[in-house]
Length: 104
Image (cartoon, rainbow, N blue to C red; front, side, top):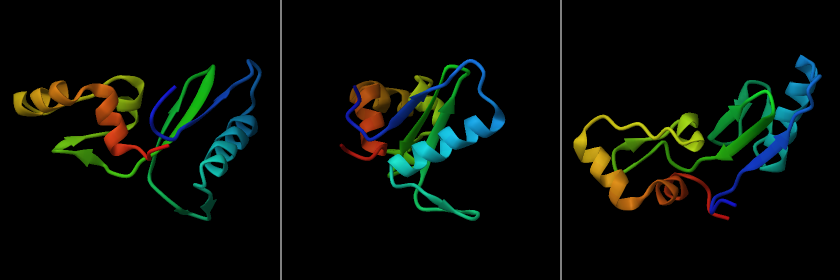
């Protein structure tokens, strides 16, 4: 599916807050990103809808001056200027995500 590590879980229609939290913790554990108290063992991006939840471990907060956040893994890659737009266009969005993500 993707060329970088990620984990996705489908959510039931009648999930409680505890169910969401348990799914979130399961995703983190599946990627070796367990949290202990307020600390976390690595950087990641988190996406959640009513239907699914996804965690993507991240190696870098940016590549070649183009920053990444969770929306980038949902398809919204944001740039600050024309130069960043050109760099991103030349590399391609999926290759960009592979650069900042953890390789499989």
